[in-house]
Length: 282
Image 1 (cartoon, rainbow, N blue to C red):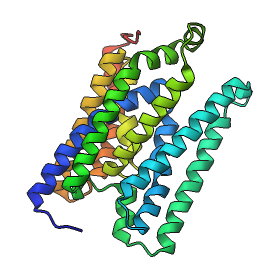
Image 2 (cartoon, one colour; image 1 turned 90 degrees about the vertical axis):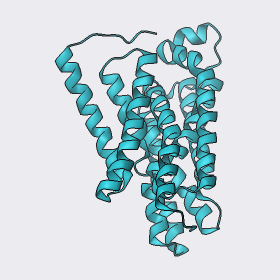
Image 3 (cartoon, rainbow, N blue to C red; image 1 turned 90 degrees about the horizontal axis):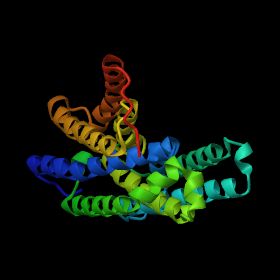
Image 4 (cartoon, one colour; image 1 turned 135 degrees about the horizontal axis):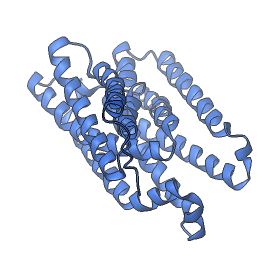
């Protein structure tokens, strides 16, 4: 691994996590709106198998992470769409079971590949728990570019996503193409989860995506306020994790995961303290 001055590594981490946190907050809010919290957990872990294969063949793991995440996202969305069309909805757990099976198989494949090719322990740990403090300049710009691409894509899909999530029957009646909206969103979700996995690792990326968004939902915020709140909290968790790493030596992913739970608990406390003030309107 190419050596960088410590101050440069911290600057890269702060800069990279800025874009990733904005994406994670907004993406997480939209995934919770669509009831896809489990997918937010599954996609980075599914990407782990692709990253493992890329690593042993000397390719940048993020490319394997992206391809595997995209494949998993498309399979999940295609099955979900087929489930609705073929009236398989009587089995309400079918999609979750499929996602869980793909997730379990992907983790097993990833660990098997790393073990078979004798990958170093440090590489394995970085794939699982993130490499925020080892970002090269090349990876930094790649993450920034992908984050901006996803944010622009989510901006274009915002209205049809909101419409199809809050009033799916009406969206179909009005001729909205829910298939393409769903596939487009899951493509962006896969890319976004892969970006977050590069920061927080395959096992903890969902904490950055789901934690801040869950706090926003607990507070019953309107869509715009909820996404802004989620993005700000995700940024606080990311930068706070980096700062605490400098003070304690514990990895940023540890603090991000802990902060995600804390943000949700604070959200519950604030809602109980200030009372119910429903703002969730389209």
